[in-house]
Image (cartoon, rainbow, N blue to C red):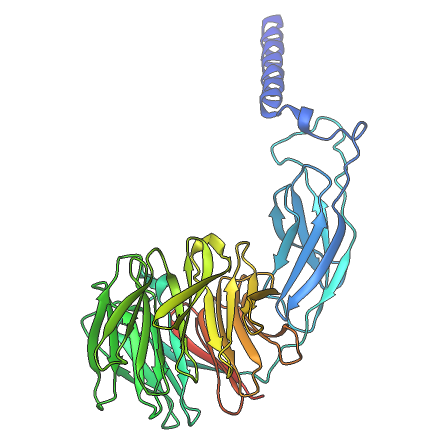
Length: 459
């Protein structure tokens, strides 16, 4: 009997020792953990909530501790739900996919390390103050339509594809895009319904498309095919005629096309520098505008048949104008990552240039030389793709793909104002034009990344 008790006592001591070792091994050194008797944990302060658009609210705050945070949301200030657990050095967060015209409550909860086991009383991790914001009403005056399916999402080249929009003298829409199989597709609603034709086969996938119309509403296209060729296509004869303009490298090929008052064609494209091609003399003549870079160019021909070009080169935005048989280039601003992927240009009736672009910190900016010198000012605080146009009253209109979705701005009231938030379902590659009634039309990729969409609004 004594032997059995001794065995039981030994077994009990072994089990106790194992439990103690398990606790000690499982416990992390809590020297970095807060001690409720020694340290006061200060929650984030100056918490603010700002409604960005009908679907998104942005929180900002000042961080006062070194612990992760739970950002929480409520519709009644009683039942809070976790939005996201974020790092200790974060000072902002955006709640997305909210409902328009609704009031929301927000708070932030400091949370301790998840891998620390406290022996004894755990410290209190506090909450911030509660703030509120109300999302604005959704602008239902915009009309949306899904025009066609684009090339599939899973293609490696998908992100480089750009669609383009033009409007004829009768206010009909004309578009060019990469079709479902990657071929260049042209579409128009001239008949009252959208109709589509394949421009060329055997060159899939194409990308970096651009479009322009002449005085007879004939269509002129430019695009970059799968063999690194820069192609020009037109239906002037009634059938599509294709001309090879030049070649470009694997990571070049961005194009832009414009038509002069004489119906002559002007094309700029990125191919180891910025190249310019025109058939103004009756034959295609090519010259080099910039010998290095020249990415994502935009070309416009004004009412005096002067040719204007904006481009990115060496991490900066440049403007070039053809004058006295040579190109005169001027510096405008710094660009994000030097891509210039998102500069766009239009020209007013006086021949002054107006450019929307993404600057070196990712903000949407506007530049103009209408006063003789380049002047720039900020339009929006985020962006990575943009397009600009001008209406019959010389008001400017900009659309921009931002981190929150597709946004539309104008300066109708004299200064730049955000006018509408249009789409948050993965919009890309916007192209904006106004018709002769000042109706705004925006073409873009959206939905599941394989739809061509159009949104429009009467003035």
